[in-house]
Length: 91
Image 1 (cartoon, rainbow, N blue to C red):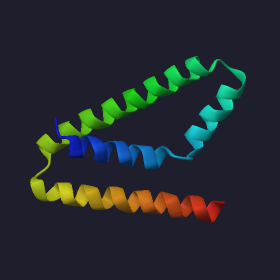
Image 2: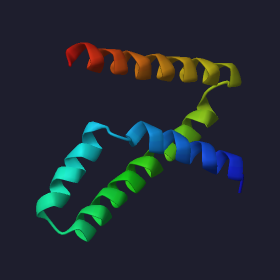
Image 3: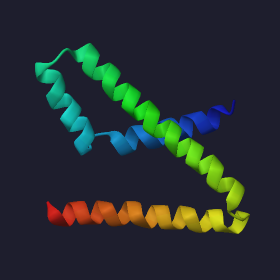
């Protein structure tokens, strides 16, 4: 296990999820439902979506040439910035 990769993945997901709409919806849900149930449901959802993302990434790596992975990162970064800008401009 590569602890640097674990730490980078943790930091990326933690910062990306901090204060987003999903976290605020879970916060609201926990105000009128059992907090442990909300925690378990939200944790399972994040675990499942992460497992799907990792599986798709591993699958894509087998089909894409090495140089293409750089472009996938650029496109993903551009989309992330674009969605952030769109959210700010809408608000």
